[in-house]
Length: 149
Image (cartoon, rainbow, N blue to C red; front, top):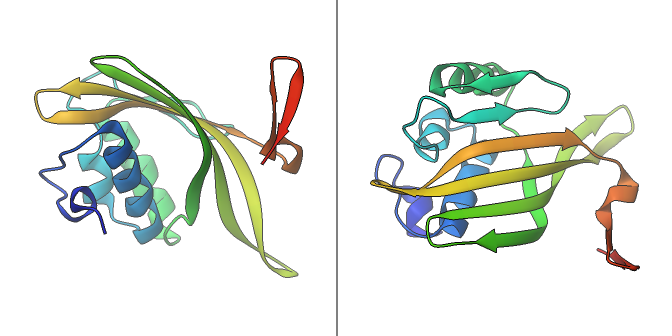
């Protein structure tokens, strides 16, 4: 396990490390570790699929606590597209979400954009915007060609 996923209050490393810690915290239902991935800024933003814009740590924490009340969120990022500059990084990922259906375990897809800034505490998430996806969105269109994942 990466060092960054083990230290909730002192996360260090790259934007990739913070992203790994975020998804690990989701999968383990660890609200403190999940919130440690976020920047200490008033205007951090989270948008869950079909949900309102949540602004600030209090609103973000409350929604994740409500989700975790039903159990952890089994989500894995895949097919990441990344842009990085000196003090910011943008990751667009396809999240594969494990869901229980009447037929048994299945998967749903979410398309998410995670934005990270380099802060005094190191890299931290400042925005997470997730939209509902479909199986067809495990494909992507790039230029004039379609890429399958």
